[in-house]
Image: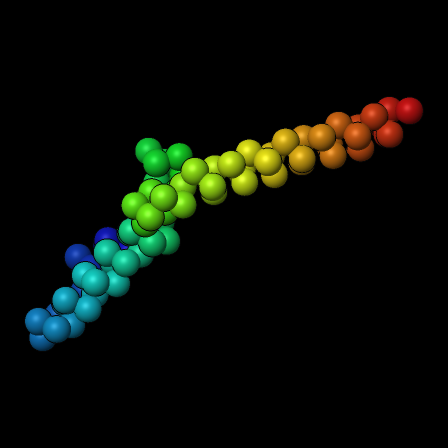
Length: 76
C-alpha cells in the first residue's frame, strides 16, 4: 500500500489526499502490527485488544486440546 502511494502520479491534490486517507485507514484499522501483539492500532485505541487476545488464547487452547485427543485416538 505504501508503495502504491509513492509510485503513482497524482494530478489533483484531492487524489493524493484520498490515497493517503485510504493508506491511513488501512494502517490503523486493517493491518495487524507485530509490536502490538498482532492487533490493529484501532483495537488498542478502543480497548478491544485485551478481549481479542483472550479469545485467541481460548481458541489456541481448544485447538491444542482437540489435536491431543485426535493424536491419542490415532495412537490407540
